[in-house]
Length: 133
Image 1 (tube, rainbow, N blue to C red):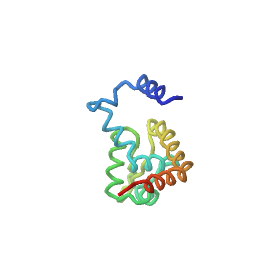
Image 2: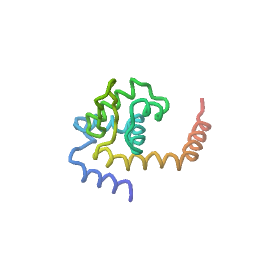
Image 3: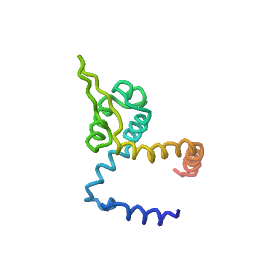
Image 4: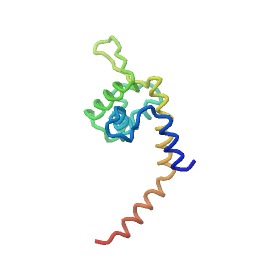
């Protein structure tokens, strides 16, 4: 599909104009397509995780950033937070049905980066080599 066809298809499918800076979906789109949110959602595809397991799985994320992203994803309806009535309470995070529907495209994106990693790095190296000070 050509890029213009993809844009036209996206515009038809969206009930909101995400190209408009006043679109109510823009902040949600920004939060759910961030580097951390994408990795969190992809990690949860394997099943429910407790906070510590997610923190270990998503390398480089701070506990504060993980907590902020989980709250944003829960607010968007993509992640469910389950609290077990134990002492201390055990909190488990999982994808909602809506989150599962987003996980496929996001994991496809991550897979694409894995498949084209060498090409991307070579392109950057080539570009950087052509830069004149």
